[in-house]
Length: 149
Image (tube, rainbow, N blue to C red):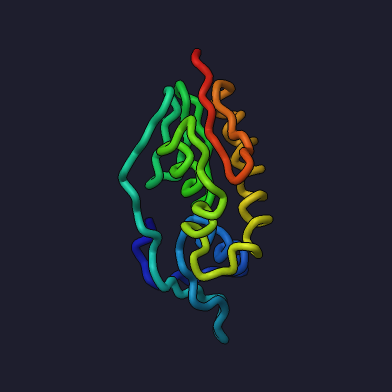
């Protein structure tokens, strides 16, 4: 977590802003007359509730998914999706619930493709960490399936 409220950056404002937003920070402004300046509105909410199922472990605070020593970094959105899927491992999580949790202020119909893109990337990362787990598409949502070792 960053401890400063304001960061002075030299020439990498857009890249730093995307990085901060990918890790859950809310960013108010980029750019200033005397150089690039990024003002951080609020740090991400840290979740310390580490969860696991079938040897698959998720550390939401670090945004890290691991299995038997192999780990992959996740984005904040991927972490939220994986968190919901791990809590309901083996059961389907409705797409509308995931969308409502991720983007409560947006129209759910407009967010389906956004969710699909995050799940697509999450499937690839999950395959790198654990070949025993997969995310299956159900009629109305997604299900995390863990195969016995």
